[in-house]
Amino acid sequence: MAKTFSEQHSLDRPSEWVVRWVNQIRPGGTVLDLACGSGRHSRFLAALGFRVCAVDRDELALQGLHDRGITTLLADLESDPWPLQKSSFDGVVVTNYLHRALFPHIICALATGGVLIYETFAAGNERFGRPSNPDFLLRPGELLEVARSRLRVVAYEDVEVTAPKSAKVQRICARNDPEKSDVPAPEGIS
Image 1 (cartoon, one colour):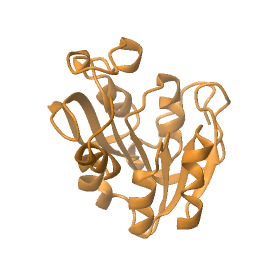
Image 2 (cartoon, helix red, strand yellow):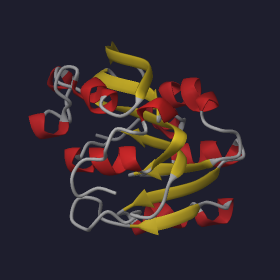
Image 3 (cartoon, one colour):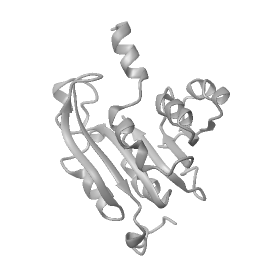
Image 4 (spheres, one colour):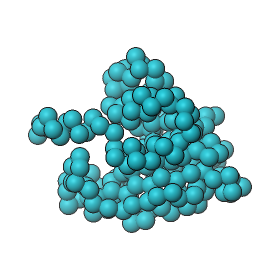
């Protein structure tokens, strides 16, 4: 089914959750937009003066970001090794994407004081359509538990939203707090 102009326009805008919490990221810092898709958050972040690294497996989607001063990285995050092993970021933004094996890598990619802004679909979303497969839906409290192990949670929600479309989501803003930096990384992650 084709999207109406209004639906497509709202899907091109940055997430309200990202807009709300982006001020937690160090001004002018480096931000990773993971599984960036069309790059709506990459463009938004770059316009705010952040240095952005956009990662996705869709080469065509990444091409439109080069002329905006955004660094792009073509990577299949689910099949290839973690492509950012030696990189750290002042912010990491992830929306509408879930691959649980990446959680330790995402957290380790945060510089001290770095901020994670994450929002994706949760159990209960099957009532609204796709995704409906439990493999792609966060379990109750799952995002909160992932973050609590090494980050200081600034804000967390497990809610139903109506825009840009009806969905059940979990979302979090969490900081890599220096007081938690002595917590060891999971085995195999550096």
